[in-house]
Every structure is written in C-alpha cells, then in structure tokens.
Amino acid sequence: MPQPYSDSVKRLLLDEEPNYPELASFDYVGQYQLTSADVSQLEQLAFDEKPMPEGETYEDDYYLRACCAIAQLAPEIAPRIGFTLLAKYPDDDGLHETLPPMFARIGPSAFPQLQETMADVKLNTWVRDTAARSVEAIAKAHPDSRDASVQLLMDQLKRSIDEAETEDDSDVLVSSLINSLMNLEATEAAGLMAEAFRREFVDEWVTGSWPSVQVELGLKSRDDFSPEELEAKVPEHIKALRKNLDQLAKISDGKERSLNEVVALLGMGKSESSAPFKSTKSSARKTQGFGGGKAAAKKKSKKGKKKKK
Image 1 (cartoon, rainbow, N blue to C red):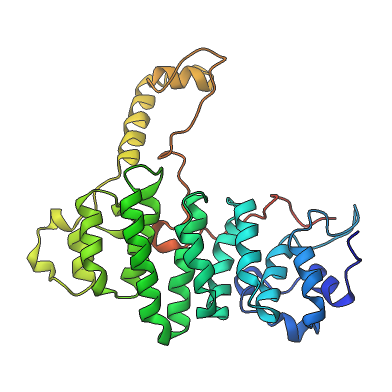
Image 2: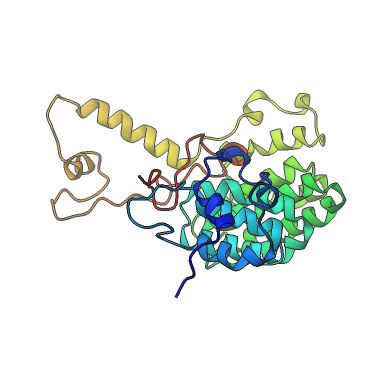
C-alpha cells in the first residue's frame, strides 16, 4: 500500500512555485529539503493519478516536478521515469517540453536511454522526437559532448531514413533530427541530410528547403540559388487542407450541416451518419517539433485537469 507523502514531498506537490518555464531548472533539493530518502516517494508521486484526497488542492504539474526532482537526486533513474511517463502520456505537451532541459541538467550520462528511445520504432513518433531534442539540449548545455551528440543524431538519422519507406510519420522524426543537427551546426551531417531531401522524407516547413539548409550551414551562399529554390515546399497535407477549405467556402450556403455531410461534400469520406470521421496522419499531426521544437505557450497536464479544489 502506498505510504503517505513526507512533508518535503507534500510541499513540492502543493507549492505554487516553480512556474512552468522553470520546472527543469528549479532547485527542488534546496527549496524543499529533499534527500535521497525521498526518491521512492517522488517516483510514486510521478505516477500517482490521485496524489491527494478528493477535494484537496494540489498543483496539476506535480508529476513534472517529481520527475525533475528525481533528476537532481538520482539522475541515473530519471531517464527511465521520464520516458515511462511519456510513453504512457504521449500527448502531454508539458512532458515534451520539460524533458529536454531536464536531460540537459543530467548531461551525457543520459545518452544510452536517449539512444534507445530514439531507435525504438514501437514508440510514438513524438516520444522519439523528444529524445532527439534532448540530445541536442545536452550538447548545448555540455559543449564537450557536442561531437558525441552529433554522432548519436546522425546514427538515428540514418536509421530513420532507412525506416521512412514503411513507417508512418517518418518525416516528423527525420525533420526533427535534421533541425537539431542544423542547430548544432553539424556540417559533417550534410551528406545524410542531402539523402533525406533527395528521397523526399523531409517536411520543409520544419527545416527549410535543402538549398536554404546549405546556406544556413555555411556550405553555400544565397547567391548560389534562385529565390524559388530557397523557398520551402508546401507540405502535401497543407495543400490538401487549403483545397478542402476552398471547397468548403464554395459550398457554404448558410445551411447547418453535420460533420459527415461536410466530409461527403468535400469528397473526404462516406456521408452515412454511421461512418466515423477519421483524421489522416497528415492532418492530425501535432505541432510538437514544428519550427524548431518550440511548443505553444499554453500547456496541458497529462489528464487535462486544472488545479484541484
């Protein structure tokens, strides 16, 4: 049976500080007098669906705080806990954005877990994307690890290019990896990047066009390309969305229509009321990783709840 939380762990659970952007950098050990004796309770808290009795107040980012506190007290187990949480809640933006700076604090000792996570094709694509961005974050926080970080990202890029023929959303991870390599000014990865662009496995709205990437890396000059070559191609799912919006504008006649009727009019599916509307992989894609991996300012908790009252 779970033990009641200690006073130190309860303070982490109840305190209004830290604010969201400081979750990974906050000094949990100093602020709450946490010790290694609290690690087991912090791990319990990270996975606790109901950390307080019904009706009592607590902060809804408690599981993020617990994970970051573990990273400060027991960095050797924090990667496992972080990615176990992310595998369980793959749509949690708070986890996706908190883990990279958390791993940056842990440093290169997290590389084995990150390498394993990036390579696991059974995992959600966005979980693997977060692992890749975490490798980049470590390289930036620990400059001596830059070469090792780049090698990890290049190895995964090669695997992802090979996977791209058969794996769904492969362009998401390929594009994220290229973006991270660009951020690390990894000119040594230019050959792999060129192959990914040649085989059309890249979302240029994430990375820019291949000519623009070469310019950014200092391999070419803007004068070497036409304005059209430097411009990113519009992804196919955006083209389809624009086309559907244009069609929708044409059929808008003031009548109320069900979703399935609109789908039928757009030629996207069956019109029967029993037919469910299913998003395609492209139209359903998240914004995570888009434009360099910066998430929206508003975050959601894993259960989508507000502070409990």
